[in-house]
Amino acid sequence: MATRSSEIFQRLPESTVQRVTNAVKASNFRRLTEVNEVSITPSDLIQSMHIGRLNGDSTVLIGNESERYLSHSIDSAKAEIDDLLSMGIRKVYLQLYTDADLTFNDAHAEALEHHVAVTSHLQNAYGKDLDIIVDTAGLCMGSDIRWGVRSADHEIDPQATIEFLALAAFQIAQAGASALCTVGRFNHEAEVARAAIDLHNDQIELWAFSTNSETPNAYFDVTSKDMSRPNTGQKLRVGNLDEMLLRAVQDLCEGVTMMLQKPIESRHVLTEMNRILSSEEVFIDWLSQPRIQSYITSNSPTFAGTLDTELNQRHQYLKVQGRNVGAYEVSGTYTTSRMIEKTYGTGLAWAMAHELFREVKSSAGDRFSTIVTRGARWFVSNFPESTL
Image (cartoon, rainbow, N blue to C red; front, top):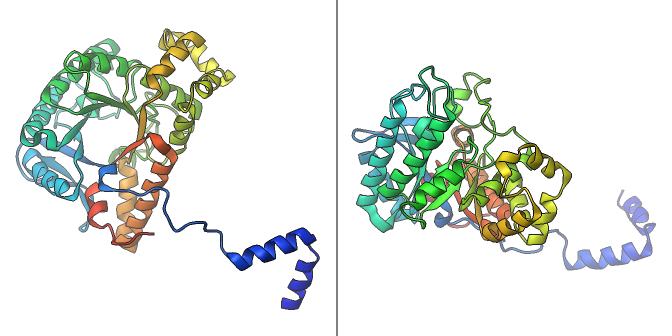
């Protein structure tokens, strides 16, 4: 067989035989370097935290004995935050909720009080040592996984929702949040939140789930029991890349500081965002494509004054060219990691998370800012002395 292989090889073009023979003598394998182009450090990660009450013990939301994601009180949250700070993780992403059913029209006021109380308490406790990012989902997310203030008949009231978001953004900014994150459900939620935050302090950042899609991977504890639940009618359809990119750009035009990709698996969106924002020429060329123009012209009230003319587009590029992107790990991704850990061990679960995080950072390029994950503390505490 070896002789036969050699005979076939020698029948290849002479230039190929010579070049390949010389090359494999110098180096057999395809790896060009032993240096990783990207690496993950604790400062790249933000720990997600659910806080449902002011006092009491924590309870398990997701996980197993070796790694559990908890529902905290303020007291138990502070104990975890102390650990995070000691590991070099200095940012927390607060997901705040109460026991109130937010499908009722008066429950959102109680939810806002809770958001303000928790944010204020943690800001007073940690000051500049801790960056507090507040998710707005818990302000008015109903049990039907639809977001918005409800009318007396439990239907979402768009005007009341936007007005409430303005109030919430202003009060949460006053309470000491470093950043607020909008949920990617309502037209112009970013514009309203940005303007309301600026009434208090225009240095506070605004993040957004601009490309939020109807993924069954999110709200895993609910969607796993009823696969019709992810279709809220509020979020983008899975795989609609053009729509996602246009929504992200529009949010940046409305004042978003960072687009947070949800779910984390759709990292191709980050690559495209990095490309689109790379130069004014690329930005205008992308917006001029027929399929993008079709979205803009058929939704003219949404894009009027921002992306509806080339003159406006060039003006907007000057505003958005320096914006960053990040990614958010939804509950289904975290749960899958825990299942892998339980079945195959921490080593494989950690290596897979490490691969995912590096791919995200690589996809985002120079615009990479952060990854929000329920497992930041777990990831850093299991970081081996040497990594692949």
